[in-house]
Image (cartoon, rainbow, N blue to C red; front, side, top):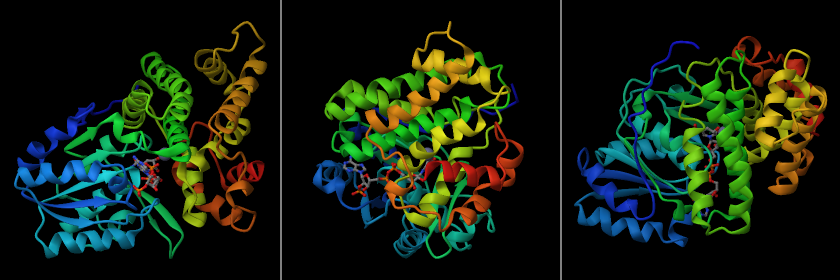
Amino acid sequence: MYNFNYHIPTKILFGQGKINELPAEIKAVASRILLVYGGGSIKRNGIYDALMPLLQEAGIEVVELSGVEPNPRVTTVIRGADLCREHKLEAVLAVGGGSTIDCSKVIAASALSEGAPWDLVTGKTPITTALPVFTILTAAATGSEMNNTAVISNMETNDKLGVKHDAMLPRASVLDPTYTYTTGHHQTAAGTADIISHTLENYFSKADDFTLLDGMAEAILRTCIQYGPTALKEPENYEARANLMWASSLAINGSVRWGKADAWSVHSMEHQLSAYYDITHGDGLAILTPAWMEHILSDATLDRFVRYGVNVWGIDPMLDKREIAERSILMTRDFFVRTLGIPGTLREVGIGEEHLQIMAEKASTPALQTSAYVPLFPEDVLAIYKRCL
Ligand code: NZQ
Ligand code: ZN
């Protein structure tokens, strides 16, 4: 196990009605805030109406930025940072899914930086500080509510890049499972696929001596396999929504990563798909994951797939190892496509062969070539993309 620092200062306010505790958290550091949200779901499902009187009672002045896109654009970050400077705002409150939260994080950093927002995302201008960020999560998926990462798109250059800094870690996040009741079939399925992928990115790691972390990862995976379908059938099943919501945070806040080397192979490949075709992140991951597994299965990786098949999918450990491994991949694909109803091929989400080569080159970062579980060079990524067509 490698050395690591454990540092997650985000206060989680988990459970029904916990929004009531948020104004006091904000008021401790800010009286004037930017409220950021997406295309309007929070107005349709009542979260906006519940929030505004609470902020008003606490004496918190609000400036609003609406219209954050799924796959948030740097142009929206610029608008938000301008509002923060113009109105001398002291904190940013994101109400939404990962896109709204990610956008808010980079707004918070850009508001206090001389650098252009895109330069903060690319790393050309380092992030050093940020306005305090608060979140109200409305979709279980990305874990952005409890990590230091934001993913921002620049559609002019077809780039979708992640940027990390502890200054962007939310100070407090409200996780009320009832707020995810309205997420709908597509977003619930895609969010579940995203949580699974975050867990797998760490589970398939170079070293295999992590009994504690592997057990935690397997529990998260089994939770998604159990409760994803329940949430699809019964959108207002509190236990299902609560389990998915907490799984979303734990899968990517470092809990199943610390001490491991990770390169995020499937995410690197998926971010190219959404950068070029603006598809739903979780759909891309679900399409790529089984193909990536088929590509990396070998004698060297066999035992890890056997562990995955037995402990996650309940496959009989007495079967031949190769059969267990192959069956685990089939069950993974079957879960995404048949159980969650996510498209199984790139063509079904409108992706053809036209950009595969350039996307493969961009996805195969130095990290993917050196620290991935199985190194992926451009020709490997291209082969995986082609398998998915
Ligand atoms: O915009 P609104 O109207 O709010 O609607 C959203 C949006 O259309 C809707 N939605 C969210 N909560 C809802 C709801 N609709 C009804 N009821 C609710 N309660 O869902 C749609 C998608 O929202 P979005 O925020 O885009 O989804 P998600 O949470 O999956 O976020 C995806 C983004 O996060 C990035 C992805 O790449 C993508 O850009 N990621 C961020 C990560 C991070 N910060 O650590 C890691 C992830 O791997 C990922 O890359
Ligand atoms: Zn993801």
